[in-house]
Length: 484
Image (cartoon, rainbow, N blue to C red; front, side, top):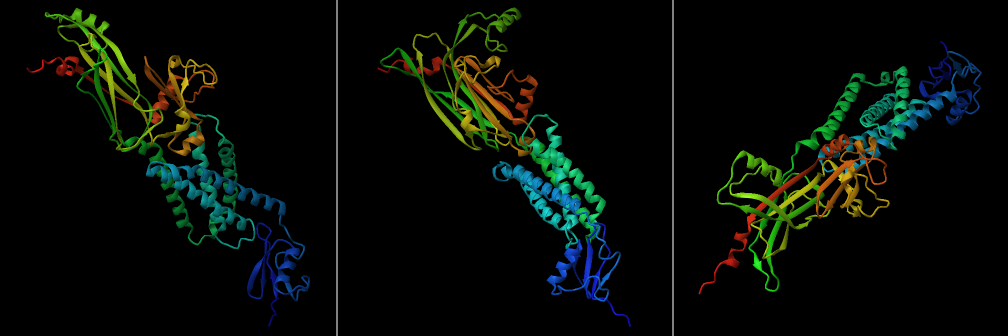
């Protein structure tokens, strides 16, 4: 009958770790003779002679066989853990703003996916400590591989989105080095085949594939589809009231009621708006000229070139009043309705036959982006040349408003440079607005292609309504004879 040794030290594995068995129980693994002595001391056997074959049996090499490359192993482990923690921090920082601040459910899901992926990578970093250590868990390598695959997928997505504009952002200093790290880490792990220790490797691979597909679909839905499917609708109304004679001044007091209602599904930012009131004068004749030559001359003269009216010619419009309904940067919530009432002073002797009002509103969809209102609401007179000097052609003789605008999806914010919304309003100039990378302190000016692309991306639109009423109708109660 053979006597089995009390302590068995197995042959080194591929990393130089030697498994130790005491009796029939595996008690751990050691990298060196010094670790073996410490392990036996913890088990209550500090005085074991490791060179005595009656107590210790060595397989695959004696007490002098320790092929562990400590520096190389620890360096790889530190790089793996550091990269996973850095990638987790990046994913959480990208997803957290959308989780708590996104307007739509799809955008919140996207943020939650990134935060969840960051938490998985934190767990993968903890697993990497074990995988590059004693490997007490069979799945530590597979969990580490999952964390590296997440890092490679998210960093690749960030780089692809960055290639769209190729602009500098401070996040480039994170996701580009992390992409290189994830490629190195993936190659290192694939050589070790860590999925071999997983009880059901096919189910594990299927779970990873399904998770990747769900992530890709949620990102595509939130960044491309969801912000464009819901149209916006507004109800704008302008109505003149009955005129009253001013008893002390030679003017008519004409009430004007303006109302705006957001009947769409999403809130909007007001970029710039305007209402303008005009008095129309015309030359009348009893015999109208409807010839083609007269229509062509009318097109050259008239404000509304498509209109043609018999007996009316030489139309002229005089601006009576102009103002704003909202301040730039105000939010118009879904379902919100606002009303303003004004009183116009129209000279009694004015030869106006009609009064007209134009109300227009330029807005940005709140589900497409966010404006820093505290900055955008500040007025910058274009004639006050200084720090805020606008080089755009239309900036002269206007009050200018400039503010940073952020995309609805933080993925775009971290892969693209900053964007600014610029709007201009003046009492005698048409409304102007722009979104681009240009701001007052930048040299040059944005290209028209960039402005068009950003306007479409952020969903800037203008709604307009106009009302025209006969001045005779408004003053009927004044001019009508009093009953005797």
